[in-house]
Length: 114
Length: 112
Image 1 (cartoon, rainbow over the protein chains, first blue to last red):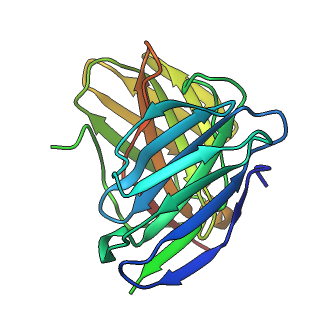
Image 2 (cartoon, rainbow over the protein chains, first blue to last red; image 1 turned 135 degrees about the vertical axis):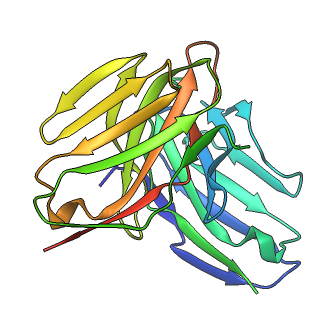
């Protein structure tokens, strides 16, 4: 168990809808990262937050947004969902601000868009 | 062309065999190389971490980096059924806050 928790485990929704994925980092970790994993693209970095501030942005669509709250948990909001958004979404956390720090991954949220 | 290429497998080997997993990459700036193991329905977990070229050994696992060929390998000796998982390579440059670039993963099954 990495110490990173994610909810929900599974999410099934329809195209056009909006969902929120939640992540709690390991105790003491200040950085939270969001990744999308699909079969053909592998793990794609979406965004990083460090101590409540956006630190780095990857291949995140404009329909997606994230935030990190004062208690350091993070939420990833996905809106106007499309079939292609079906994937596993992972949250990871690390101690510091650098992406060179070891990242610990949560168990993921499986999103299915019908 | 992807920056990191990894044979998706699946790869099935008998218990006790030596397993070789590989990745190639195109970005010569990559300096840090990692291998993650991902069990079914779980998140990736860091298995091995190496910097620049050379070998690193940890128990039954050996990571090799050949920067001249832009090729990295993970060897598993005396493979066990518990090694059955998807193995992802990941790498990043040695500057700035650059992201990890992952391979797509190789699914490995060890047959008892």
